[in-house]
Length: 604
Image (cartoon, rainbow, N blue to C red; front, top):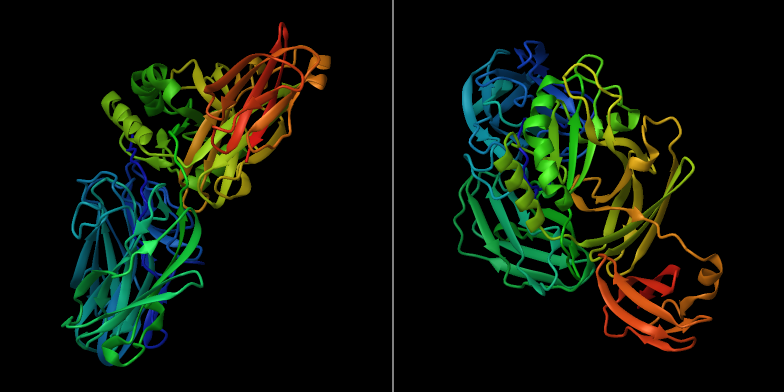
């Protein structure tokens, strides 16, 4: 098994390909474009060492920009296995040049030195003049602060004339995969200051009122940088400008600065732009496309405890899956299952794969870029989980992260139709996707060749589909999502053994924001009682009144399931004062003897 790690926001830089004097560029959007060598993988098969990918697995990531990126398959290549990606023939015209690229760095297998070496060569063969090395692990050189895409440049020594080639050699230490994107070879301009990173989280925790604006820069030109203006702006608001002087930033040198004006923020969704201008007092530099970064930022209004989502990709034809499940994961699940939500997807390999594999499972496999079984993701991120202590540590880490969504969901099975009602209170604004996965507690009929005879939390159906329901959330505004699906034709063995796992996911970054098991929709014991009994007005600012034919007990539950208020013997027309509670969705249970009804109420 490979490692499970928690996903944190990365520092992201904008593309830095200049408008002119580009010798070659490759963004992998339509094809690999460059030539790859082959290598033997850990199954003994000969594969292309480099390949084009539209989504990344081990680690989970998306292209830096556009539709594609290149992957060196170090996750499946034994240690010391190498593969070279070689450019087409490049023509140089008597100037100095550099190679630029983006590389995804991650915190999986932190001591495994999976790396790339970048070479210039005069022939189309491996090797040549070594220009630089970058390790995949964020803790290895050059060390960085978090998972994500980073910009790297490598100057080719001397003045080049004629033809040449760029080689990017990947070396495996059997850790995670290496992903690169936006490779370019370009002439070094005279004046070019690159804004490399804009250091700000995409979600600002609740309670934060002031956020520093920080950036890092690199002199990508040949002239020394002595001064520049650093500017930032929120939306269409005021532009904050600070003049940075007294510099002597030579070619290739980096510089970091925190703007003198912090951003005073409040809950909401914002667009922040950071950019450089007036380089050396002469206005724009030679490459405008690397001068600014724009980021979308959510400021949270509140946070709640997280229920992590565990997604396992396994098969009853997979021997290592049986070892992992029987020795580690099943006992861990038995002891800790109340602390996380789980879905077990049955994949179609090795061999014929698990009999309970479905097209929706394959969609999730493709979405995450899963290439091996067993694979276990914790809130979308994979890492080491091959023993009990590491499984426990991953759970501890996941539970320590706040969530910015509260979910309350109910399920109701009517014949073969599963209906799910999802009430969400978001504490951040943004567009996310809502999923409801129908799983069966235990199955037996998908037994195959690996010796396992029972399987748990087995995926059966995703509502509304394997790609989820897009919802535009606005902080502090409750949202109800209703989903349903026909379970006819699924592999369900016992309709009474079904669970529904609801989760919210950032579909672009793959971050799982929150999860919840749906509870059984409360049955109304007396239809006439339910018709004649309710709290009104609804919504309300906090003062409700009871409509009833007889005295009732009123019990109020918050969206997390905690009983927050009880009032006995409430008469028709009598008030129920809930003004002391925060705005949001609550459940009111009204009862009299054996009669009971439940309604959703909103305090606004």
